[in-house]
Image 1 (cartoon, rainbow, N blue to C red):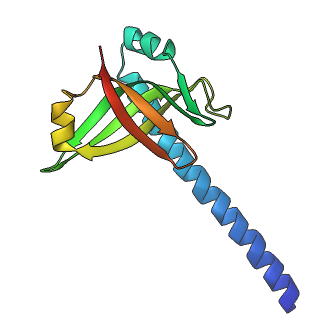
Image 2: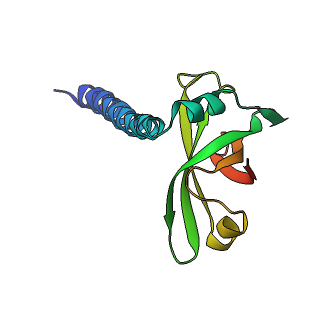
Length: 137
């Protein structure tokens, strides 16, 4: 084989490997989201689907979410917040998504948050950023 052919094959196999890695990470995220949805009652699912989206800027908004998982350390709270996508038109449109949110344990406690709390979350997919704005009743 000549050098040009080896270079072409290297590029092709490299691109295939990247696609497979990205797909496996995507599937892991989707499985986790599906697993989180399975922990909800029909009432919780309906409430998330009927959420009120408030557009903040071009592709940033706030909406209702629910805290499905909480892990606390001495100073931090690590949350998985499930929300229903009615904004970003992609493969996840009209599907449940989740965001990993980290906050100080003090802020978590001061807001009165716990597993299954409804929260208003701020989402900015351009920066892969999400934060809890307030607790919802």
